[in-house]
Image (cartoon, rainbow, N blue to C red):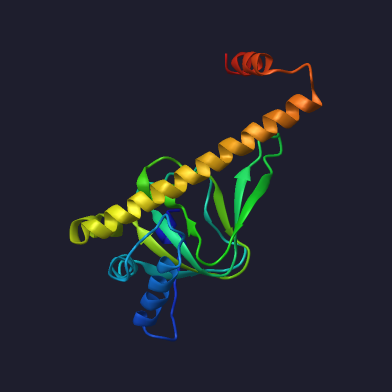
Length: 196
């Protein structure tokens, strides 16, 4: 099931223009990595579709293909970001909780790699979806806004990569402190043996 087909259409009580304004405001409140002007934010917002998902729905699944899907801006509710465990039971681990204003699935809009995590609605949620096709339209009709959006997403992903690298470094130091006989060379050798 594709991301687009997993959404059911929202029937908002207010006009579409009200949702557009709400999306514009959310985009303008993003951290510095997404420095859109009001006009650019409106160009993005006008191409987004508002959708709802009931609590408990997994609307992005780790490992699913991303082609033709998109990214979402969480407008209302809370979403659990989950990663599959590597154990025999395959349990999922909640790695973070997304709240209104969070972007979800943004890696999938930049490349066609399989989804890196699952997104499960912890509560009923309202999302604004920017499909891959809508991004292509944005590139053609508002290239400056599209470039700023893409650079902003890339900057956010770089921040996340840096944070993950720092966490791995800390985890390595803790592991080394707990097991003084383990060092980087023995860990690297063990990893090679597992792959080979």
